[in-house]
Image (cartoon, rainbow, N blue to C red; front, side):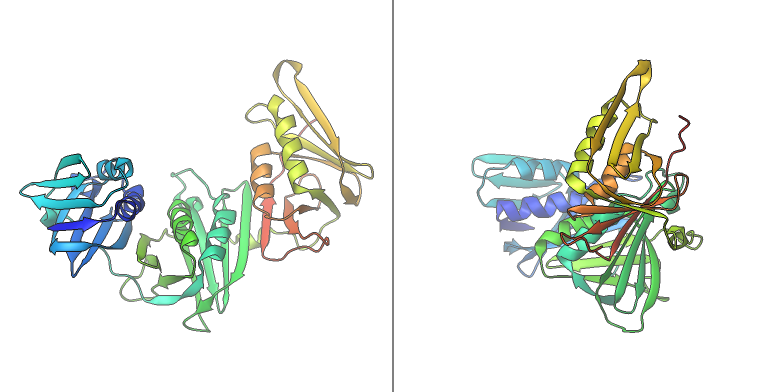
Length: 377
């Protein structure tokens, strides 16, 4: 194997592939990235039996072949190279990399021990790449981090005709985003539970490429239990989580509310951040709504307290409700709108935060539900 490639193209390809490699692989070869040259193109791929990543790069190929090298080491090296063409050649049990006057020799691993990448499932449809990336980021923030509850670490993808719904919850908050897409089958009705971290990393990478993302999802037969995404020269697959017993989280959104507040998103984020400085890890911030606006307050150890009043439009009976400050900030920042509409049933039931446009109209598509923390005063 011997070829020449542009430094930036190589560095981007290796960095993207190496990002999903395991830090503690079950077998050494899974820590490697596969470099395979054929027909004037280079395929850079990685696979850990859960997630596969593959990107194709244009090169000047002198000799076809394949080599398997440490992914993280190669990513660090390519990132640090000077901005010149890179010459790479497999020589015996080593990979030689030359860029300008910099020269590296890396040990290779046996190519024949590397597992075959899974084939992409059949295409289910396409979605705008930028819109997809935004939607995933808005929802993935609410997914759980506790690996002992794997179901809660996923984003539920609900495909129904031309509508996609993304939902995630860690039991303390719930985010839901709905948006349009272009399905291959107009009557499609499928659900999948995708690991949130994988989905977020994939969307974040494919979004800036522009154009469309193709979503591949099998329904029975080959490729079942797997989802795939592709855009441009990049493709990735991921095993799905078992979502058979995923709770009916949509029912958590209240059918009606008894009070509603409208608040400036940047102002409320700033005030919550400031007031929460005195709050301990498990201490909530209190939001007191009334006809005069909103007062945000918190108390910490050794009598440390903080409060700040701010403008808010409120309708309903005055109420005081407590929230985890970081969960509240996460929801507000992902509204992507100037105004937040907070809807309440009472101080002990979940509140719903929705985005509103400059004219005050609620923007459909995104809702963030947050559980209150009971506070005795």
